[in-house]
Length: 278
View 1 (cartoon, rainbow, N blue to C red):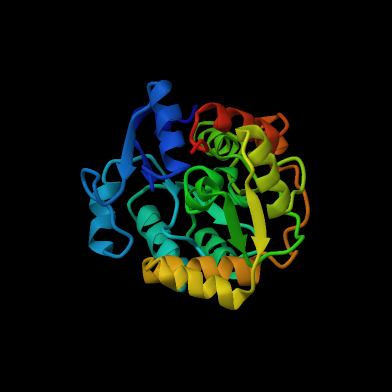
View 2: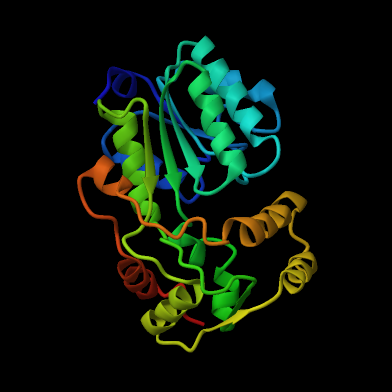
């Protein structure tokens, strides 16, 4: 355990999100002080209001950086760079960044972090398995049909618990400064494969239908999502899911010393919770 995480709070940006809340739970369980960085936090943190950044970082020893809604959004890299520079100026050297595979803007944010002079660690992640149960894919699963503009492209879905474990390890243990860990699950699945596994685990007939990008854009517009989230979904499904990430990595093994959690373990556990029952 590092002195900074033992004596001073760790600021978890996005501390109420899928990964952030898991990190908060793990650090709290160890008796380590935590500060949640969110608009509802005390003090509040808002990526869109840089006047909130310094008060949220006051007295903390390390920062976990998660950008909302995603690092691929224009301006995200500059915001991460500005925050990292401010942290270092305030004596906070230990920074851990949640990044995304195959996203040009995310990789720019990584470079901004490196240029700040921080003691950095980067967690570059595949698609979260939990997007099927804790995000935008849950509703269509409950309706029985998921329509996406993606074909037979393999994605190494990574479990949010593995990401949180990796973040806690990087924040609390020595030996991870200057390391980039690319985190994936242990096998490639197409979205059709993943949805079929979810259906079997949930004991339901859930269909996958490939649609055109135009049909997907129209469906997004019909749901009246926030503009930045609608843009993000279109970007991810039209740009990132083109096969560029069809490869497994050893990142989870490197940082945690164990194999990554398989998608089947995720579907079994999640189905048992009843969240996919209708």
